[in-house]
Amino acid sequence: MKNIKVKRTVILLGILVSFLLLFGCSEEEDYQLVQESRFALGTYNQVTVYAPSEEEGQDIMDAVFTRVNEIENLMSINVEDSDISKLNEKAGESSVTVDPETFHLLDLGKEYKELTDGTFNIGIGTLIQLWDIGGDDQQVPEEAEIGSLLNHTDLNQLILNEDSYEARIEDPEMIVDLGGIAKGYAVDQAVQVIKNHGVEHAIVDFGGDVYVLGGNPDGNDWRIGISTPEIGESGVVGRLFSSDMSVVSSGDYERYFIENDQLYHHIIDPSTGHPTDNELSSVTVISDSALEGDILSTAMFVMGLEDGLDFVNDLEGVEAVLITKSKEVYLTTGVSDLFEIMDEEYTLAD
Ligand code: ADP
Ligand code: MG
Image 1 (cartoon, rainbow, N blue to C red):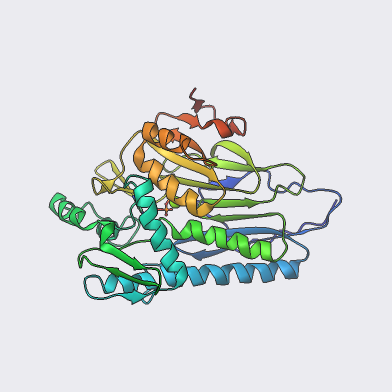
Image 2 (spheres, helix red, strand yellow):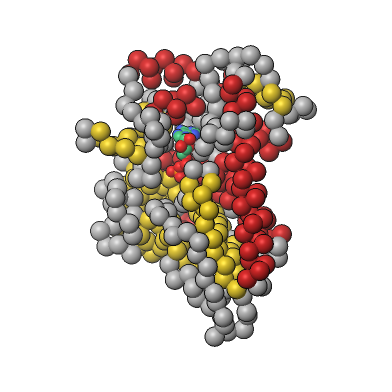
C-alpha cells in the first residue's frame, strides 16, 4: 500500500459537487495526496493534487491560490480597484485600459450573450446588485425598479477595442458583472498551474465548478457526485464517471433567500429581471473547459428543460445532466453510459 497523507485545512461546507470514493490508490506509484481549501471568489475553493511529495504539493497549492487571487483582483466586482470596478465606475464617462485577461472575458461575455440568445448576459450587473442574493441587502425589489433597470442591460453598450485593451460602457446606468464567468475561468487556470508542475492526477472544485485532471490514480475514472438540488439537503442524486473533464453545475439551491414561502435565488433571467423560474432545479455541464461549463450551465438553467436540451444537443463536445423539480433526470446521449442514479427518489427520463 502506498503512503497517502491527507491534508485538509478547511472542512468544506455546502459544496455543490462532492467526490465519492476519492481515495482509491494504486500499488505501483507513490504519490502524496495534498488537499487544501481556501476562500476566494465568494466561495470555498478546494484543490486536491497527487504530488510527488508533500512539499511540492504545498508549493503547488500556493501557486494555484496566488493565481486565483490574481484573477479575483482583476475581475471581482467586490474588489474596489479591480478592472471591472473601474470599468463600471467610468460607465458613461470614459474608457479604461484593462488587463488582457479581463479583456478576454469581457469579449467572451459579449460572444456568449449572442450564442445563448441573451440568457447569459454579463450586462445585468445592476439587477444582480438590486436583488443582492446572498448579500447584506438581499430583498424583493419593487417591480418598477426592476422594469427600469431592464432598460440598461444592452451589451452593445459595452465597447471593446482589441488593439489597446480599452473597454468602455456607453450607458451610464449599466454595469457589468463577471460573477457567472470568473469562477469557471479560475478553475481552468488552476488546472493549468497544476499541469505546469507536472502533476497528472488532480481535482479542482471551486464552489461546484469542477475539473478532474487525469483519471483516478487507481486506474479508473473519477467518480463525481452530482449533489441533490433540494434546499437544505445534502447528498447526491447520482454519480458521473469522468477523466480530464470539467463538470460544472448551476442550481437554485446554492445561494438564495426565502420570503413569504417564495424562493429567490441567484440566477437571474435577463428577460424578466427576476430569479429564473422554470421546471429545472439544476443543470450540470460536462465539457473541456470549466469556463464554458460555467457560462453554459447558467444559460441552460435560464432556458429551461426543453430549450436547454435543444441548445446543448446542437453543441459539439458538450454534455449535460438536467434535474427537474419533479425529480426527473435528463441526460444527453454522450453521458448516458457515464451516469448512475444513486438516490431512488430520482428517475431517469427517456
Ligand atoms: P452557479 O454555480 O449556480 O452557476 P455562479 O456563481 O457560477 O452560480 O453564477 C451565478 C452568478 O452569475 C451570479 O451570482 C451573478 O453574479 C451572475 N449571474 C446571474 N444570472 C446571470 C445571467 N443570467 N447571466 C450572466 N450572469 C449571471
Ligand atoms: Mg456557474
